[in-house]
Amino acid sequence: MSDAIVAEGLVKKYGDVVALDGMDLSVPEGTVFGLLGPNGAGKTTTVRILTTLLKPDAGHATVAGFDVVRDARRLRSHIGASGQYAAVDDHLTGAENLETVGRLYHLGVKRARQRARELLERFDLTEAGDRPVQGYSGGMRRRLDLAGALVVSPPVLFLDEPTTGLDPRARASLWEVISELVATGTTVLLTTQYMEEADRLADRIGVVDHGHVIALGTADELKDQVGGDRIELSVTSAADLEAVRRTLAPLAVGELQIDVTALQVTIPVTGGAAALTTALGHLTAERITVRDAGLRRPTLDDVFLTFTGHETDEKIRETVR
Amino acid sequence: MNTLRMALADSMTITKRNALKIKRAPDMLGGVVLLPIVLVLLFAYVFGSMIELPGMSYTEYLLPGIFVMTITTSAQITGYALTLDLQKGIFDRFRTLPMSPSAVLTGQTFSDLITNVTSIVTMALVGLLVGWRIHTSPLEAALGFLGLLLFAYAFSWVTATVALALRTPEVFNGVATIVSLPLIFLSNAFVDSAPARATEGDRRMEPDLHAPPGHARAVRQHQPGHARARRLAAAARGASVDTVVARAPGRVRAAGHAAVQESRQSVNPREAGE
Ligand SMILES: Nc1ncnc2c1ncn2[C@@H]1O[C@H](COP(=O)(O)OP(=O)(O)OP(=O)(O)O)[C@@H](O)[C@H]1O
Ligand SMILES: [Mg+2]
Image (tube, rainbow over all chains, first blue to last red; front, side, top):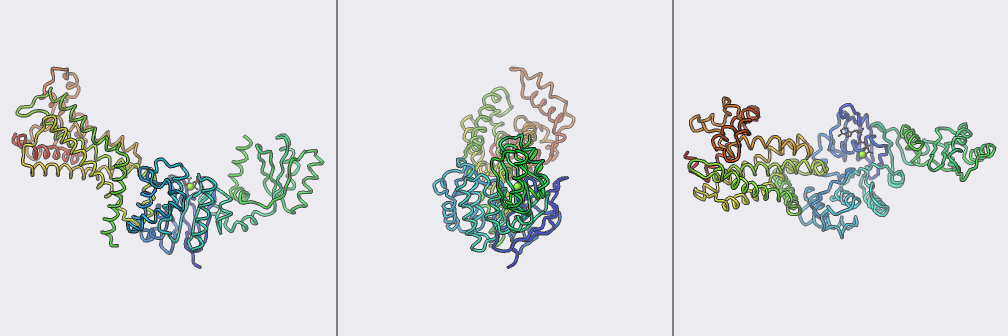
């Protein structure tokens, strides 16, 4: 299987701000790649370069075999894209919005109209389809925008935070749509802030920070890279948090995470159940009341927090404040 | 599909989209229809009775100027609409599609012809109501209006270019007002700011650099009842030299002059003969 998306050493600067700093990517055909990263990591910038909206300052990329700069015009018939913010025409109806997109993909009048109806139905917008978009809710706009990316069932699809602002039902149905498309061979690159989404949809995940990929692999591989297990403890009062930290710090194999609001401490450990027993023993000796304790595998949240360390610091500082 | 056919088809798609927008949101069109009505009535009744011109009514002198002024304003819709689309990310959506890149602009300017025609028709009708008449043959009059429309179309492209450089609707609006307002008053729309043109031939569009600085005087002298057309004209001419004309892009100003002049002549041979 060849790669539908390849990016090598992409660099993009906005004045002094380095948005992309050596971004490398490769996405095999018919798979979903999830770009995960904190705000300002460079996810949108990457998507904009790959969808021909921006020219990189250095590096190169091909999508569906076309160079994103040199073959930009030909590439555009092979991609569908939905940006981070819904770009729909307020004064046009949902159907007219999609028909316009269809016509600009050079579908015939009839085919464009038919396709618009199919997509409205698929995105649960049939009823609203003949109303001006002005009266749509945020989630409805988002869905219409996503439908716009699927007008020609393009072989490569770029979705920038596709489920942000969608209710759980709409999110689930978008996941279903994406899964169906991938089953028919579509390649998808999506960015997301939701770990659950990356876990569920993405065959491979790239964790991005400061404009380049800092960790890459399947969800399981990344979790293994982070390593070990997590002990999660809840205490009854905020005063105990510091005592827990002091007592269990020697057991931890990395940074402890303390959530002041939830009165929860997460401790990365090795040794599984034995480590949990040891920890509880120490806490009993210190007469710290534990409300709830458990052992779990790392989640993508942990992956995210571990690899994008500065975000962890910020989160802790925020919660402490 | 070959490039030219694709460009045409895409332009038509965008034109249609914009036409739908005009239909759904007639607010912009409202401005394009209401502004001319207000301007024509205002100038015809307020200034028209105050200013006397030898040989013709001021209303008739004024109307062609109002035509061009309104068209200049309504052509700014092109730029404004483009900045709105840019801001909303609609351009980005279009730019990921395999469409002809120029179609966004040609489509916009085509659909703005609809607004421009609407303005012109409105103004002509209101003009007829207040006493403006066509004194030439229907063909010449039609050519005059065609010229006006062409000027509008060309000016749409000017505002489109400016819009793409400025990018946001707020900045565009600010700049458009600052630039177009002086140009309108510097033109010969309201007062004949280039009286020497008959003798000076081609130099007639050049600002008269030796005219007296008259702006302040104009304000002072412009007491109700004392105003005289000639004094006002001199004052406006002075003001123009004082302030902006010397720096105004000569060609735009000249084009404005020419358009006013041309539309005046094509409907009103009397003025042409003077
Ligand atoms: N048009 C621009 N002008 C200046 N700086 C920009 C511009 N677009 C992006 N940047 C900067 O580039 C960096 C990467 O931005 P980008 O939008 O790619 O982040 P992101 O990962 O999509 O973030 P988010 O999760 O908030 O959407 C940021 O530091 C941002 O401030
Ligand atoms: Mg983004």
